[in-house]
Image 1: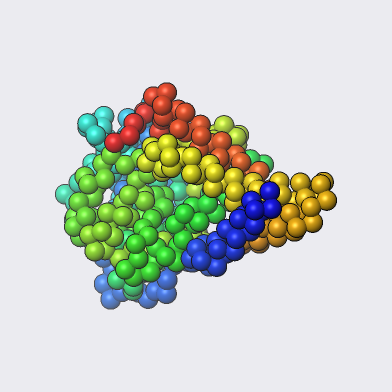
Image 2: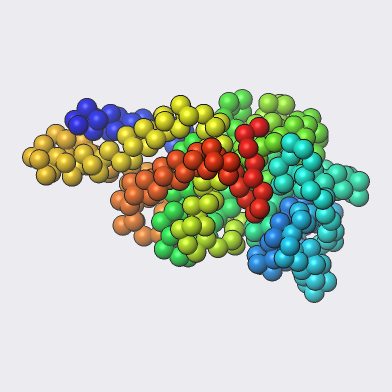
Length: 382
């Protein structure tokens, strides 16, 4: 047990100092200035059964205060709840940027639904306005009125091909407060933003809810055709752009928010488990390594502390307590970002246990033929 406690503490010291300072939350849009000429932008929104969230999100896109030409293309991906009709009603009532609502039909062979919808929307945007940039944003994302302007200014100022912001997810219910900040914390641990943003870096990632993409970079990378099979489309997109020589940037958002509610554990469980095993490339050995790694890094510290205190093992208790303290310290900035009280930081091992179970469940569902299921569609390993 003392060796396990020591290994956990060493892991946390390494994560604290050597994993791109993933725990810091100060990576925001880079310094920016207004360009001499504002480029044209097509905002492409894939939407499948999103009538519940569109009244909060779509008006924020139509109301963008952008100095250049911009149009919104909402792709109704086979919705059964009147998503397309509602979008037209909102545009007629609110006005703002021009809106085109279109539908691509069922996905072609080898395509995931979202990327099929993006393909259709991007093609239509190229035909209509030939945009300089594409803003790919989900139907549940609400943007501040200057969001598009700030994204374009950042891309032009730093000569970036892809600028992505991790939207601030909703934290209202108890389960959202427990799981959502940890979701972004774990994402940053896997893909440290500072490493993603470093020129010539090998780490690539994006947050699919808000991606500004230079049209030329998309064409050079063969997007979306080159990534048509991807379940985790945002990270795959960033890798494709980076491999084609594009400069990418990823950070946390201040005024880009997800309005999708996850009131119960079941909804959050599905959100994570639908793609967790795909993240592990559907490899059993990677799954085993992930489970063991999560156990060592997140579960061992509290177990070692309790076991040491109960059994009189001072060294074991010190090792477990120190590892738990470092863990909590790295989690505090994310809790502050989400406006959560610091006393919830010691609950991170319990949250990590839930994520471990979600990951295992993702593998189980995959082998039962129900992996990567989302809104009536199921995607297997490519």
